[in-house]
Length: 77
Image (cartoon, rainbow, N blue to C red; front, side, top):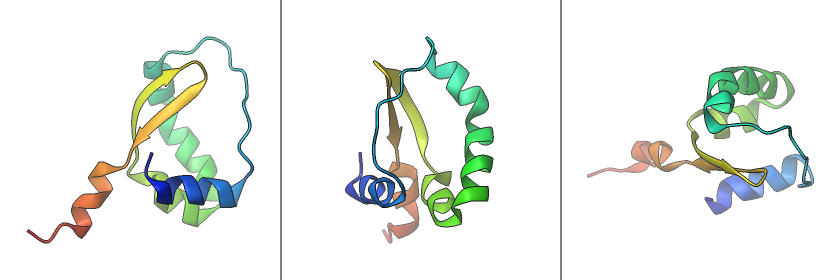
């Protein structure tokens, strides 16, 4: 995970493990816009940070996100 996203997450809330019912990454992807909508209503800065995140995997209760698309904005090649 990008250290900036981790730092942002740390500043928003303390990390904690939450046990979810068995979920598949496709189930999370299908509801990701709902997650973003809820995040936007609570913290617009966090929403901006996570808006470009891509869901990579969900294993053992750990959701892995990829922020590499957001780096395209900074690429000046």
